[in-house]
Image (cartoon, rainbow, N blue to C red):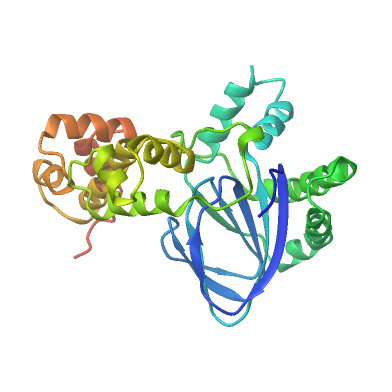
Length: 298
């Protein structure tokens, strides 16, 4: 879709469903008109005019429009956002690594949807349209400051709608800008991800996963890390932990049985990995849920 650029914007109108795709950029999707249901890593989430969807890098997202859907999407390179954050909070942050930690803690989830309303969106449309126009010619030095000014104005208008929350990092940098292109994640990486999610209980090896997508083990490992910021087996652990959390929320099954259902036969090992990824051990997670559930309901 073009050479690397720190900020790219596109406006499109669609009447048909779009497949779930992932990009190695942060995406800001402004819903200008219409309604739709998003799907993919975001689950199934309805959106309407006046909504803004913010997606972390490598987050799969597609849409089912309900009629016509018009959006403007800004693709922002994560390293660029880290730099902006560092200078924004230069009095409090030590270096770019500290800025990275700050962003990860503030936005622990891979997807955020906020409703800014049509009135606020209307105020932002001139900046959005100019950013799209400037993006059509590609990344040129002559347009850099105008692009930066438009993007900064948009972020300034969005800032009040995002509150600091969470403490768990969710993504990590993995490529330098000089080696990056503006393009979707390779389909082999998406297929491996789906295999790991579909058959989470299997003890996969990188050799087995590579055979699934007809690549060498080293190639399979490389494109997966590039796409999702972690190794395939690390991703499988995350999938198991998420499913374990879901079963803890929705069933009364013993922790040992739940661990076995997601592919961990050793309860102690399951508890350690669950604690590392979720932040608490399974027993405490369930107790917390019991404490916050409404009382006196059948």
